[in-house]
Length: 186
Length: 132
Image: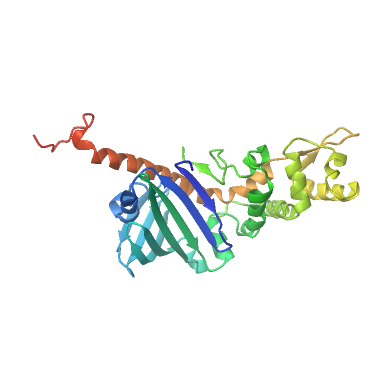
């Protein structure tokens, strides 16, 4: 496996799974996920800032992030910790108050960390109440109707197009031109 | 409701794109076309289908803007048009970008944390409060 490659998959119609390997030991990754002063240093795309970060790291405790976009618009995310097994496993609910809350969408995210030879694999699996809810999250900011075709498209991308073909590259390309099923971090 | 950035016309076009992709024969045709343009006869070969049946599928793909026909009156070769497929998959891009870039920043954080941990022996970044 290549380090620093983000994989996004849909293990079931209600789930999204992210997989990423970091060149850091597991306790360091755990801290980066659970300590506000560290989260502020990485959470959000380039140009975005985590302007508020509250974490009550105990079962039943809540967390709340406010991410500020380059255009100064804010997005608030919040949830509750369900399971905390430092430094291996973190289970939390999450709602995006600005995109999904109105639709009653809440995800249950399980983050698992496994360390091999000083590198840590992070697996983050989010489960939603329905395919529609999951697709709304994947599809945030885009036309809702498009998401209904997600599985058809996904099936095609994953099973029918030979990887490496020009069309596959085009189909799954993102802004950086990397293949979508395995985005190279660098 | 979030601003979608998509007009109704674009939404309708996306609907046509996805409807066109919903059929396995049409997806197989697209897959074949990734290797280069082909005539209807060539496209019909791998399928137990008549040329008119294939032509029907091609019309759906053409209306969805996924393929275009050449001008050559005899052959009218079919080729892929990339743009609508790009639009159809762009909807995931925001989510992907969020995590790709966040994790890139996390890589940088780990580099910094490891450098900080190694700092007492570092000569490049002497600590102000370093013990004598």
